[in-house]
Structures are given as C-alpha cells and as structure tokens.
Amino acid sequence: MSFLPSLRCLKSACLLLVWSVAIPASGAVSKPNIVFFMVDDMGWQDSSVPFHSERTPFNDFFRTPAMERLAASGVRLTQAYSCAVCTPTRVSWFTGRNATRHHITNWTLKGETSGKSPQLLPPAWKKEGLQPGDAPTAAELLRKAGYRTIHIGKAHWGAVGTDGADPLKLGFDVNIAGHAAGAPGSFQGLERYGEGQPGKEIWAVPGLADSKGKDIHLTDALTTEACREMESCVKGNKQPFFLYLSHYAVHTPLQPHRPYLENYQKQAVAESEKLYASMVEGMDASLGRVLDKLKELEIADETLVVFYTDNGGLSHAVRGKDILGTAALTHNLPLREGKGSAYEGGIRVPAIITWAENNPASDLQKKVPITANSRLAKPVMIEDLFPTFLNWAGVASPDSPIDGEDISPALTNPSETRRKASIFWHFPNVWTPYPADRHVGYQPHSTIRSGDWKAIYFHEPQTWELYDLGKDPGETRNLAQSEFPRLTQLARELSDRLNEMKSPLPVDRATGKPRPLRLPSETPPP
Image 1 (cartoon, helix red, strand yellow):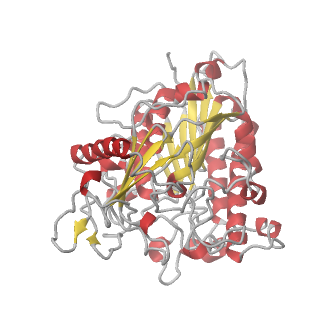
Image 2: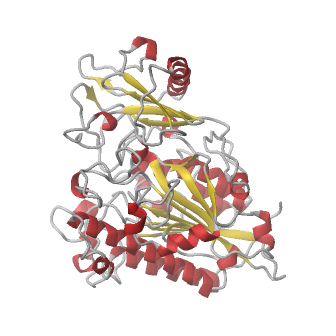
Image 3: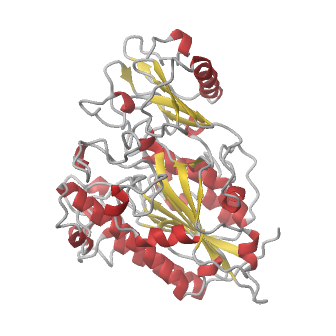
C-alpha cells in the first residue's frame, strides 16, 4: 500500500479519532487524516447506544444521538478496555505500551498522588509521567510522516513542571488547553475555567482567552477550537492531519451543561445524575458538531473517527445513587463497580470506530474497509490504537517494544473474536479512599485476561479471583477454587509478565520492601 502526501489538514479537538484523506493535484485520495475523540470518565452504560448484549434503562435515559450516528456507520467495540484511571491509559495509547511496561501506573500531577492502605505504601512508580525520549509517541511518528498533529483539551501525560506536561514537546504541532492537570477548575467560562479562583490554580485550564469570562461551557469552547483548526487545515495546509480532541468532560466537577440540563430536570433521579447527563449530552453535541464540520468541509468520506474513553465510569462519591435509585457503585450495571476498580466497570469502556461518512466508491475506504452497523466482541486494549493509527497512516512501527495489536482486520471482519496475546492491567496504587462498604475492588491490583477468562490479584489481602466473562460479565461468580488449574496458569503468566517488565509493586508497611505477588498455591482460599 502506498500513501502520497495529501492536501488537507485537520485541526480539531474532540476525544474522537477521525481519519481523513486529502486530495492531491490528481484528485485521488491518498492519505487519511486522523481524529481521536477521547472522553474522560464516561462509563460503558452512559449512552443511548447499547454496548451490552441488550438495551438497558441506562440507554433509555442518556441522550447521545451523535454516538448513534457513529454506531450506525461503523463498528461498535463491545469489549473495549482502558486502564482503571486516566494517565496510564493516555500513555498507553500514545506509546503502544502497556502499564506493566511504562510504569506510569497512577494519575499524575505533582509528586505522589497515590493513597496509602492499611498494609501498603505506594510503589516506586514513574510519578513524573511520560517525558520526551521515554518512547516514540504517535504524534512524533505521524509528524515525521508528514502529518500536522493537533492537540486540543486534556493532556495529562506529564507532571507539573516537567517537559511531559507540554504536548508540544511530545510531538504535537498545536496545543490548545492541554497541561499537567487531569480536570478543570471549572467547566464554566464565566468562572474562567478555574483561572484566578483560589485553591484551583493548578486545575485552571490554560489558553481559551476568547471564551474565558463568557457564558461558554468548556466542552463547547474546545469544540469551537477544533472546528476552527479543521477548517484552517483544509483551507490553508497541504498535509494530512492528526487531531486529538481530548475532552475534560465528563470528569468532575459535576456542573450543568446548559441547555442540555433542561432535558433532565423533570426526571426522578438524583441531582448528580441530572448534572452528569447534561455533561454527557453536551459531549455528544460536540461530537455531532465535529461530524457536521467534516461534512461541511467535504472531507467526511475521507475521515475515520475513533471514539473512546479513558477509564470506566465514575461510580462513587459525587455520583451517589444511579438513575435506578440504587446505591453508589452501580452506575455501570451489569458491570461491577467503576473507575479505579479491577472489575469490568472500572476498565470496560464505550468505543466506536467508523468513517465519518460511508462511501463505497472511495479508494481510501477500500484500503481501510470498516463494516457498517456492526459489533466487535473481540477484546481490544487501549494500546491497540497506537499500531492501528500507524497502519492507517502508512507509518512503519518504531524499532522499540510495542504491546498493542493492530485491530484493522477486525474492523473489516467483526466476527473475529480472539487476540494474539493476553491483556494485562497493573494498578499497584491506591487511587482514592476506599468506599466504606466495598473496598476490595479498589485495592492495589494486577489483572490478566486471556480469552474469556479474567484473573485478578489483590495485593493487600494477597488473594486471587477468577471469572468467566463470556458467561458472567458482571463478575458475580468467583471460580478461583473450582477452576484452580486454569487460575494457576493465568497467575503464572501474569507473574512472569510483571517480573519481565520489572513492574513496580506496592511496598509492605511492615518490611519497607516491595511485596511480591504470591501464586494461588501460596495464598489463602477466596
């Protein structure tokens, strides 16, 4: 496959991956632009698009018509995964490396962000986050291949005061509103997105001078910048573009996104759910504006869109009761728990990949065929996006370790369900104070998924759990005892991986040394 320089450049910021192709003088489409639309903290059920095998009350509550538009034209990934919290996810897609390898296992800001548990202290993880030279980034490789690389929104790769906090030092030509913090001081333009507010300086969103002081929601401001960048690229540049639109929404603080809040005011749900739903609908409206702009610029059929979120849905603390009126930690049902947890609610996320507009006659779409209105049950991990992006752009993989798998073939043939290798998660940190009545899932943990089988090791109690996700996606039946030989095999593979990667382990308070993982034969029964 040969790729020639294109004549279009995208500038956009919307947790969306759009792959668009420019038209050289001959009039033939050659190389796609890429737009990656990333959402923060959005759960698997927080959409009118069902990712479960059946429609649920959650799908009937949330309003996401733009996501419905994406799903109708492309592939819905029903078993897409991220890490349990944000920075590890962002480093993994950006470098193609799993957290067991890159060692950025918790969210970054300024120094140690991990909590302490009764028995464990934080591991020796890479607290400064991703830094220039640590690994080739997707932005660097695409820029070297002739792409204009654009970052809009949340960055959260490197800690405060480090080069890694600046997307311009990680391969982007443009950075709008990205810095070290992973949440805004405020979503409200009238509050200047946290700028100048006592106690919120570190969270204040940089840039966006045209919107600060005005009644403009942060999601809308970022979308306007994205559309402006796309138009500027198409009209003024002669190169393909990679746009990473990384929304701060729907992360806390939960604040109204008007006018969408009015759609939920009469709903008999907790106030937190009304606010949250307005933020979800506002995010979806952003997606719709990006799709409409692509069509207006006449590049929709040359553009691939990837929608993904950075971890499972927040499901405790400020969320309170879910829309069903049940307690906290149930917002991702039938998946168990939420953000920060080892269970599926903490790591399984909504994801869609599609052409912004289908055109069977397009030579470009023939090179990268995507089956419309289809569902892919193959487990997909966030680092898989790295080699997939490079393949789409005709860029050779770097001569450095890559853990992700190119998922392009599965987008053409969604019946493909098996991966070449197991998936690993490693979160040896304490993300946040444990929920009072359910702490096990949020303890430091390491996990492996192979086929439908998922084994979890909790480092504090030193116990194992085993689930058959094909039959039990809600992880209600721990099969660690009845399937002990299988658990032993998976545990050994996970242990070998952690040892091979020299992955940081939590520190035992009593000894002051890293606490080694114990195999099932060495641990108490569940």
